[in-house]
Image (cartoon, rainbow, N blue to C red; front, side):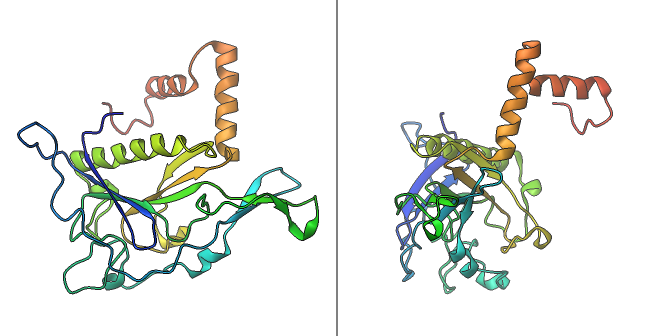
Length: 253
């Protein structure tokens, strides 16, 4: 894909990748987009190494692979506004996950991932029992910060910034799908303490799975069945049916 947003990549203190995605802002004499200043600011924190690769166990009743990531119990939990790790690093404040003093959209590797291909280990079994096979959760988890404004939300973004977020999703999906172990990439947003969110800053996540999750597999199977029966695309037919019913239309565009 061709990005309209400007992408800048840096490495955080513990070796994780961080990507700035900046709104299009014109260009230089050659017409190339220019990123705002500060995108090469260094992460000055003294961070411990990333945790060892998470493991997955197969449920013998369903056949599903379940990530086991006990290290996530140590992740940051509902910090005070001044200690938010997703806000930019302001002069005189403690460094956050984002070294720049401001940003448009940022994507970085989760510090407490459920899926981690950096230190993959060979398959094994729990307690030496073949009933419970275990293998590395060799995927990847990333955090997407929609805006530097702690009090904002995705719905408050203007069209230019919303496009930058979508371009970041698409760019990361394309890159993550190129990882040999990855079978599915899922971009999503959980919002609110009620659903278990531990950071109030407007953000989402990207999971690159080393397997196809059950719900996605169901969608693929249903779409295949629909195409085999009708020769048509299931999503197109759903949209057409909604337009014909004309009861749940929020916007036409």
